[in-house]
Image 1 (cartoon, rainbow, N blue to C red):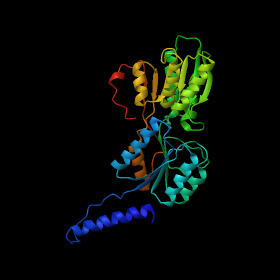
Image 2: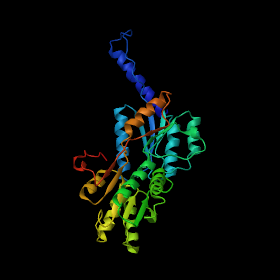
Image 3: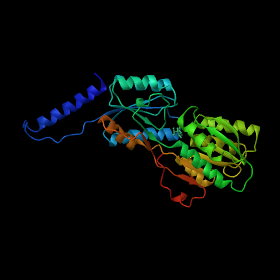
Image 4: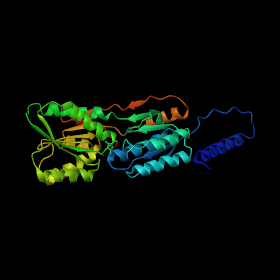
Length: 326
Ligand code: GYE
């Protein structure tokens, strides 16, 4: 029996039980219970504190919303994520949600979902497809704006300087946050000859790789004005390498990072990070709302962006910030 079938049977038996407990009086009016839906969620991995927080938030939100969550984690591999989506199709879930690890390569499996009549919600990252009808909508952050916000801080912080050497450590190749955080940043400083991005290297959103990248670059040069890192995990790794090299993060090298994990906010307060562009993983409630609408056949917005801010060393409210929750 499919998971959906099993869930239905269960609900059916429960209401039968409720009927009998009324003492056999079948004429009693029953309150109309909203039908429980099943959402299959294929998470891409557990590469960062952001991701772990995102998974936990989605699990909590499903419980709150009385949504039955079928959860699979792809351990950073697209083929695993595709397998997970296929298993959700076989189980006839009501809605499929997934955070695509990269943008390319989803059309076949999403066509299968479409043929099975199961709506698909993209969470966190986008895909590239010829057929925009293969997904119903997207919920997550505006990464282009995040890149722009990172560059705005750079312009403010380095206003008096005439030559700024920037190291950029990027996230996973071909992923939306990697592409757009780079694009938004580079577009904002393009044409301003004071800024030189002397190296762009991939740290795959991993703390260990962020450290390795930073260590390798520091072997070549100490002339680094700014580190722009596409996520906090890589930044935390890079800071370790900077300190091991005897330099002072936040002073010798200006550090701009994205996400807003508690660990990064703590280092911002200590002066080791200069700017944290927020990207919230706490999108579980919105996912559940949208999934319920899709299951009910209602239309949803094509794009739902989270609202976010930037935290910098210039802020006066840093000490009063509530715990981040990730
Ligand atoms: O910034 C990073 C995570 O896709 C927005 O993925 C997400 C990114 C986030 O690994 O920490």
